[in-house]
Length: 231
Image (cartoon, rainbow, N blue to C red; front, side, top):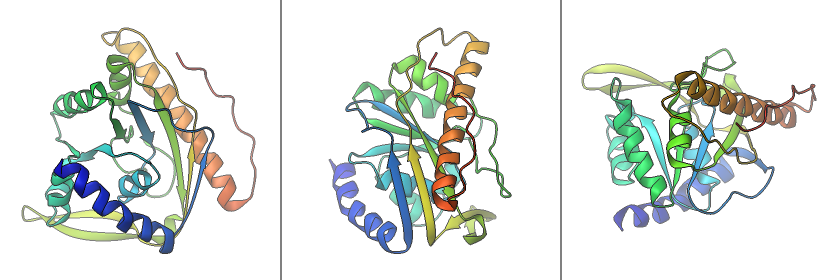
């Protein structure tokens, strides 16, 4: 109950910010399905979880690097909001919590790259968490592609347990998002090559959505590669 209350209190604040400081442009290829779903996005900035969540009509539970939970004030907000810390070396614990949320019909958000995208552009290779979530839950994966102006990102230092940690924060400027059609996957989660293929398929769709976002922002259309079908 407290998590829902905090969500409804914070949502107008985030929407107000994205509506003023950001020139947020969201295009959905179709409406998001009701019930359990997995939002899977690329990760050019530390602020992506908050901005992507702001476009959803329902509360989402986000898998976030545990380091952010150690940042004063922000970490307390993340914990009280019910978001899911991903601890290095213990990713399965985060997936187990995410699966519980999906079983209850909730929305889970994950960034398959597992870290910020390369600072100079491009994408990290996907990790397999998104594939395992999809195969174990049966929930559809919604690919989301983000494009922003990298030169506007600001590196901000935070003290985390005595160590300097750096985030790449996007505080103002154009922020373009394309939401793709749901992807459905079935298969054996113990089949590692297949799980890797599912993760790469999801990432391919995310990249194509990010390219569509780039085209809308820059107005310079480029040919798109054909997308693989859901497996």
